[in-house]
Every structure is written in structure tokens, then in C-alpha cells.
Length: 388
Image 1: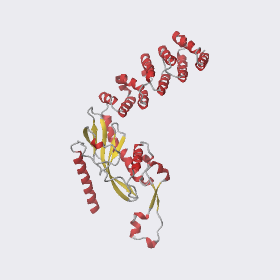
Image 2: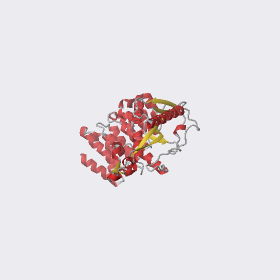
Image 3: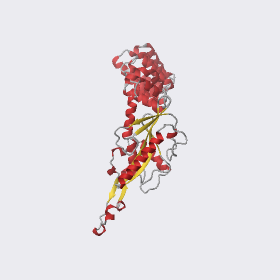
């Protein structure tokens, strides 16, 4: 009874603290607690705050609100929730209090702690700086082995046999009477002497709250919201591109914004933008020319991806083939790219055997067969032999 009363008192104190702390949603420099990790002070960032109540939360100790910080354009800077979690270690539970933050597209962003209450290990020693760095890596891993494990999978318990004379009440209930070790296969995925903390916090980051955040974001999806994302941070751009990839009906409205992203010098953006370009879009001859022109300012690997995309198209216009060859002749792509272009021509000849009768294509192939570079000349000669 006394224990239940103490827990209720602690929970009430925490909820009052969180309510007072977030009540005005105005994070001025002196308001937030100093942090142990990470160094970025999320709670003192400026912006507009919005509160989302989590209904029927399975976490009765933690705050039942997700706090969202938005910029002036209504885009999310971060989502955050204050957690009061019990970390159970072989029968003993210790409490952890911290904020967890997710970015504007629902990815794990970081944690924030009161420096007076750092995370501790099973031997009660505080986390070292390197432990927080490792924890951040663990929590960022969306496919961690921790996802599939249960609490009982985390340790190997060695329960020594006791003599009947030693089976006193203390022996029966003293947790120190058991020794526990982390499973060898888990050691590279957790922090030494903090396996339960890693496990609990990973499931906190990727559990119930993450699902609520994803639902909040899904409800906002429309053309206006996508346009904001495309003008936001890198992660927000990537999020917008993923939305369009999954629902290609948005593509037509944003094609003028999406095509330049293919030529982005940011590899992540370029790759995601390429994934949005479909063979259906490239079935139009004008679209083919616009797409190929992107090579001029693209990353080297993107130039190859543009050619690979064109290989998936069933009907490529003679003008597009001429433009591809010209990209090689003007030094925009390497001889490896020329080899891939010849594969495109071969594929097109299956349905259009007269494609080489096009005077512009024929003229360029003749020039390349006499190229000063022996490899280019031989490659072209062998290609012409193979198709005749």
C-alpha cells in the first residue's frame, strides 16, 4: 500500500512538472534544464508549439502529450515527449526521466536529460560521454536486433543451487543471489552493463509515440503540405519525395520541381528523386529529352542512373537517342555510358528495326566508329556488326 502511494505521488509530481513546464510553450534560455546528451538544447529552440494528446496510451507513467515545435511556415522542427520509464534489471526496477525527440518526418532525433539525473548502468555508475554517443547510434538504428527481442531474451541467468540450510528468506528474495550476463550475440548491439536501458529506450523511440507521430503526418498530406516539404530541410524534401513515390498522382503537379532534384549534388536527394521518375512519365518524347538534359549537371553516378532509367522505357524517340549519343560525344558521360546507350538502341530495334535508318543516328554512329579513341571506335564497330 505504501509503495503504491509513493508511485502515485511520484507520477503526480512528474505530471505537474511537465504541465507547468509546457504550459506556456515559450522556451526561453533560462527555462529548460541543462542537458547531458545531446549537446543541442531542443527545449530552448524557438518556434510555435502544438500539443497532441495521446488517447489510451499504454504508458501510464509518462506524459500523455506529444509536443510539436513548428517553424513560421507550419513545418515541424521536432516532436517531443517526456518519459518516465522503469528500467527493470533482473527483478529490480529503477526509474529514468528524459525527453525523446523526433524530427519533422518522424525519425529519431535525440534525447535530453537533466544533468542531475543521468542515465546509469546496472552497477549504478553514470553513463560516460562515449556511452551517450553509442546510445544515440543504437536508438537511430530502425532495424536493430532489439526490435524482435523480449525482456527474457536479454540475459543469461545462472541460478545457483542452494543448500537447504541456506534457503533463508533473504536467500529466496535477494536479487544479488543471482548473477546475470548479457547474451554474447547481443554485446555489439548494446552498451556494456546497460542492456535493459538500451532495450527499453529503443522500444520507447520506435514504439507507441512513433506510431502517433506517423499518423499525425499522414493526416497532413495534401499538395499544399507537399509543397512546403519540398521547400524545407533535406529530410523534409526526402519525405515529400517518398510521399510522391508512393502516390504518383502528386507527380504531375510537382514535376517542374522534381526534375531538377534529379541533378542535385546531394546524393540522397538525387537518388530519391530518381525513384519518383516512372517509365510511364518517360513514355512521352518531350519528357525523355528533359530527363536526359539533366545529365549536364548531375553527379557521375546519377548520369548512369538516368541511362538505366531510359533502358526501362519501351519506346524511346530517335531524338532522345541522338541526345544520349551527343552527351557522350560532348564528354558528359564516359565510354561505359556509351555501352549502355548501345543496349538501349538494341532494345529499341526489337520493335523498330528501321531505327538506324534515322540519318542523325546513323551519322553519329559512323563518326564514333572512326573515333580517335580506339576503345570507342572498336566498341561502335562491334555494336554495328552485332545488329546487322
